[in-house]
Image (cartoon, rainbow, N blue to C red; front, side):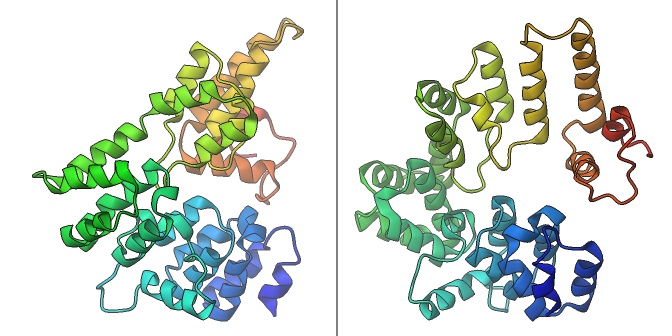
Length: 318
């Protein structure tokens, strides 16, 4: 009842969430986890994932959840630990639901669960991008063995390119190194930058960034450098995507402000000062960005909204 009532709020009240987490009421926590889209803003999703409870973990996999949270859940699933892993529960869950795609989807390609990796490679086959195939194949080799990868490649479900790569890898002294090298080549930032420069509309640009294989991160430094050299099309749309580092977003805004010709004379000085505060006060540390976000969104009850920008960014007391 408490968990259901909590979901009527825009954010999960912190005291109530603390109580539910202390009590470890699995039914209540599963209710919250199943509605993770609504409790994400309060940090509840990460705290639920922190419990490392397979029953609770299954709920956000069935429903929408932030990719980083799904990645944490999937990559810590380990078969052969003496207890049923989450990856072993997913097929049973699918059978009970009429065999839909596995909860967690393609994220399982970066897991240590060979049954799910093989199933996804066989099920999706050549419909998967080369990056996804070249991520799943070494995972299947590492955690399922050379025989399983050879049999999968022999079924002719992966498409010509991936099948050829698997054959070359299996014939080499270090199959994982061969497969990983092909994946790195596919995911090289220069290749993504070339694709982004050719795109003709914003949805396509966003798709190129969002469709990277699970667990593989965008080289934002390389993209920022390329954009600084020659503006990338639809850059403002790209940096609004979920998961883009906060410093990339803010520095993009500051860069856009620098290009304005109608700004008052002292705007450049203020922008330079703000840029320096962002780099020194927030940097790339997630804790500093989280602190600033909580203050800006009213989640920090101790923060005085009338405090200076310098106090906001440097972590000074309000």
